[in-house]
Length: 79
Image (cartoon, rainbow, N blue to C red; front, side, top):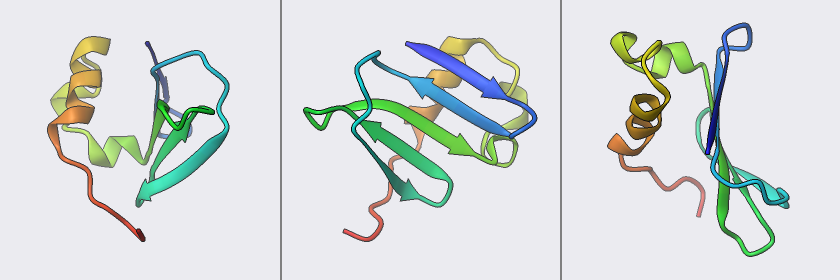
């Protein structure tokens, strides 16, 4: 698992597996999920991350930031 933060783009990307990305889907405003050929989630991108993450956790460790992504259940959009 790899976490990449691009402060210039204000984006956070969590790469869960190194398999090839076949499809990406925006599952909510500014949240994109990448899927492999077996429809497994292999990556998650959060745009406007500074507005979506609590201030105290923005510079925290990778494990804490990754856990933060799972705290809020996802909403279903468009399906």
